[in-house]
Length: 294
Ligand SMILES: Nc1ncnc2c1ncn2[C@@H]1O[C@H](COP(=O)(O)OP(=O)(O)OP(=O)(O)O)[C@@H](O)[C@H]1O
Image 1 (tube, protein in one colour):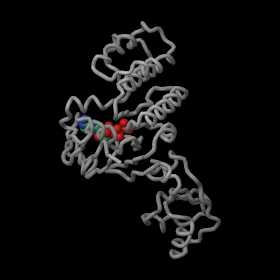
Image 2 (image 1 turned 60 degrees about the vertical axis):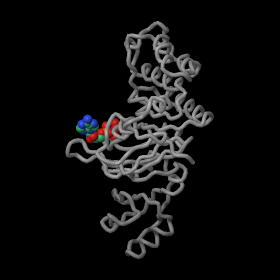
Image 3 (image 1 turned 45 degrees about the vertical axis):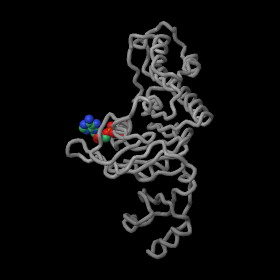
Image 4 (image 1 turned 180 degrees about the horizontal axis):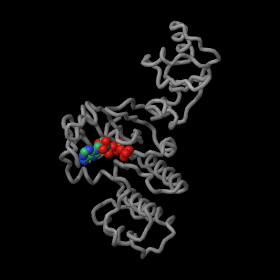
């Protein structure tokens, strides 16, 4: 599968502060990749590097094979970008802004925009400046879809949208991207939306990427285990065990290891693992299991 985005050994600092070193990832054509990470791990930074707005300290990012620091206008036209829900030109109404954007994009598909705008129960003459934050986000998303870009980059796309509209948009985007073989890179803190939408997840922690893999594969291998209280000191730092914690009578931990493998490890460490229960996880629970609760 051809890679639409390739980030190689990306290192970024703000002043003396290291955000990450040697970040490597690819986005294959036709896949929907979700970038998940706690506040301040560097998601927007990565998106800004990918769009050429920020220069990394070292490493490079290729978009359609071109260095992101120097994208040609033809390549820029293939990228639809949403940065944290912003729409410029607040003095325009939804019809004016549609006409304005259309002039920049030869492949403009106004039906995609108006299909979404139909859901907006507002007067077409109302200016963007008089809309709510969520309504403005909907306009921004409509404008992105109408560009018919090959690569869509949506940073915090759910910002300001109510639950009904989020589900509607996620389903719409997922159908649209799959039908048209679009490549999508999204971030959102609303992981239920991500689970409904994405094929692959990339999870970032402070300093780098913890993992990138298909969501189905992650959820079939990464489990939560509950057992009767054990001494978590013996488990801290053990390879393959994430965030063991004991609360009152019970211990909980997360692991990619199978139950039998865990039991074998416990027995080698003289840990009594009575009645250990294996639990399946949602993507949100897996994210917390990998990155910790705080
Ligand atoms: N222009 C800047 N100058 C200095 N530090 C910055 C700058 N922009 C971001 N940072 C810092 O870099 C870190 C990463 O920021 P970034 O916006 O990439 O995080 P994020 O993962 O997108 O966070 P969030 O989930 O809160 O949107 C944060 O600690 C932030 O304070």
